[in-house]
Image 1 (tube, rainbow, N blue to C red):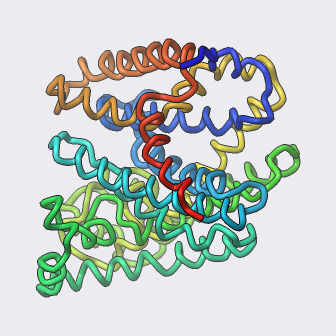
Image 2 (cartoon, rainbow, N blue to C red; image 1 turned 180 degrees about the horizontal axis):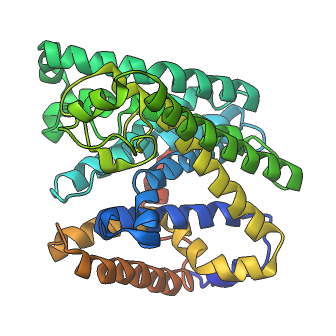
Length: 397
């Protein structure tokens, strides 16, 4: 492969590559490292706050960036048409199948990580028919699904708990038989990343991708919108938990008696072990509620906007963020690599005294390997394999 020195390309503005997008991907990768191998947020102080922020929100950012990537793959600023458009659709579908298969393969390693790749692959499939819609229409769909899907998910989960219909569906599901999992029921309803409530994130990413991000005013509006959504989501949950009588005690009882005082933004409340409609009032990162979707989308939009602002107007910003951007440019390799490393090293439940050095080691090693690799190659190892896997789409006429 020809030498390209990708790292140097991040030091000068390139209209052909969205450097801010790679910086956001890199931050999401590091955030997932923190959630998977870092200390528990209970360490307190500034470190504990940062670790709490890394719970759930990097995955949300990745989902939003997946929507952005889908628009790039199918045509930006205008969707591809004709044969070129059909080939783009074929590449997306192949990519989705690879991600779903890779996700279940990584899950089979039985690490403590809840692997998100299969959900991403399914989200690509569901969002693909909407790729020609305008930003305004996509925004309406994002808002509507953020409002409607959490109650739908809750009702489906209650129905599964109260009946056996899901067993019948799983028994007939070929994906469940092949993977030894609950198949589509797990992907859509019972998994850690249910597609029903993660769909708004990919829609939000498609909205941003349809905007002209070369205009500072547009980036400013995206940042302000992100901040407003974060306030609305987390603030709305805080108000609901304080104003709705019995809500905090009901949430605490559903999670085994833990304190619900921080459930408007934190994972510390824990996962529910019993169903209560009051759970729909919380905004904890993995709570799958409207409040959490709105708040987490706001954080992701703000981060993405600031990544573009930092890299599009300042040479210093590009230099400071270049190592992060390089990691983001091979995000699939970095994500899969860290799960394989967790499995190979036998890292499970580290004490906080060891967790922080391990986290810093993961970040340092990943950054150094990314710098070395991209100095010679244009894509990461798994990115090359993904590119090769999608080549048959060229045969589409």
